[in-house]
Length: 411
Image (cartoon, rainbow, N blue to C red; front, top):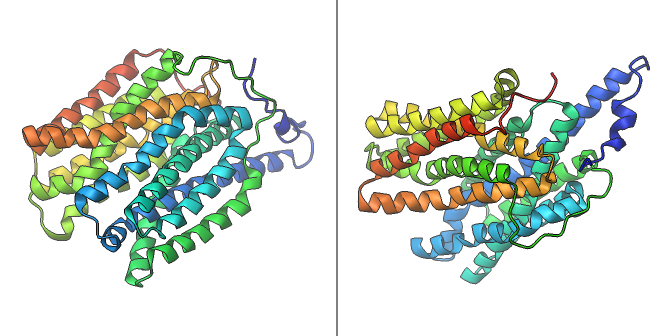
């Protein structure tokens, strides 16, 4: 029994090819759907990067210490984790299109509320709600991407995640501009909210609406999930742990281990981000040509080689090159895991994505603190070497799991 009814597309996608204008209508419609989903990815990435760009200002405004800020920032991932048991089921029951529209509007409103916080508890509550709405956006938007792949009949998931990365750059640059103009955080957030609303109102009608009702099988709250999805989640855990240390520790590594001073401290992080975004825009082509299995095997090797290069040769050029390899490596892993999970024939896409995302996200949460503990016991180079092993684990798991097959989409 198919989980999703695509009959609503039949009038466009299954007309006789002899009919005048058929090919034009088909291609233009598919392109418009892809742009619409991309704009939602951009909106979500822009909102998150906008918040991140103003963290130092908000820390100063609320007179928070590093410890206080770190504790408050935990509210965001806590909100995401608490929403995970529900987001997949609601997306499956009510539809990813409907949930996405509501969730991304809440995401934008919660962003603007963060700029109004005048007390610690207000910021923590705002981040908690920001995390909840962010998780619903993540599951429903990636479900839309799975549907977009279905109607395009080719792998395009990595390019969507590339748009998110591009939005991160754009949000950081816009944040620098807003701060140079001495604009208050709330006013900055309102401007971004306006941009987001513009993207939503001009694209929501092109989101894919799944036909038919999906009946959820009643299971216990702690019922055993699909084994293949769990293994995909473990691979995602290894990747996101590697990605998380790049976000949180790359600058520290360049300062304390590579001994770089001044503005060049951000070179490692910047090189990683650039290559991750680039890898996502080109990743789909490699998957269509070589298959997801080979691409992910190579990705795991790149992650390990990149981290061990930085560990064994802690110099400016070698460490920068190493972090670039890590960026290329992690770029295609999670998008392809989501794409494969969305094709699971036994589980609805929303629930499948939630299962993989839940396990994967634990790596993003646990990786950076783990680095800190190991570094405190030994030093930062040993902790980076420990995470470097995760890339080889990815390669080994991908090589041995039957779920990885050559691209099933016809080109």
